[in-house]
Length: 120
Image 1 (cartoon, rainbow, N blue to C red):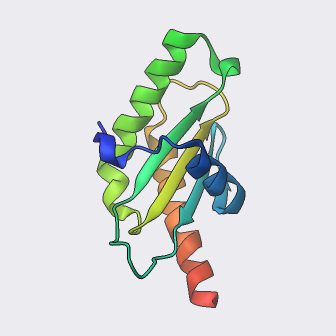
Image 2: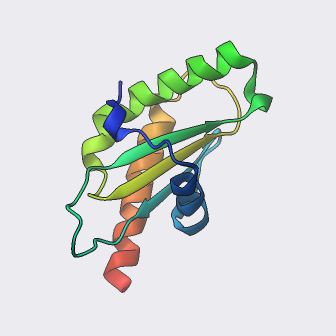
């Protein structure tokens, strides 16, 4: 599981990430990755991640089960995320296992942001 300080909870951070971050879509998930610019007075912080699981996916129990599964899948991959990054994963529909999609999503987003940084 993800520690509390690695979770994204503020609605402003969700909005910033989904509107300004890099986006990658798989069959059942949409991922957004935004790297916050470092400021002079702030220390670098670790990556934080959040989930958006819509009611169309299912009832409350089902949505929370899916969120726990995905958080469990994100935890070992969190070290791949850049410093000061915000990750948001939106669940489009339910599937028995999200682990391969989460792995593909995070790897692809990190590669895409590295390409964007290289071009800048």
